[in-house]
Length: 91
Image 1 (cartoon, rainbow, N blue to C red):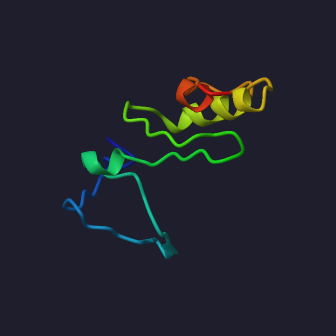
Image 2 (cartoon, one colour):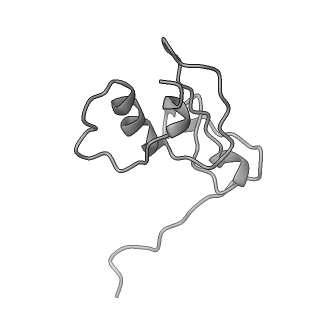
């Protein structure tokens, strides 16, 4: 006999945004199963960086190693992403 019930996931229709999660009001979310919700902008701005647009697939995990390389320091020990070489091309 089960002591707990199965998990239930509520999936909203595309383009429906729910901003109240158990009383916690949120401004954004990237947790839906819809393809459009997987696109998250990543922006690097700073001295010596030229304007570029990267259209290949990247991950938020790529941010830490890229910033570390820009600063010429060792990446965090838990960093698992890849270097975004486009950010450092002209450096």
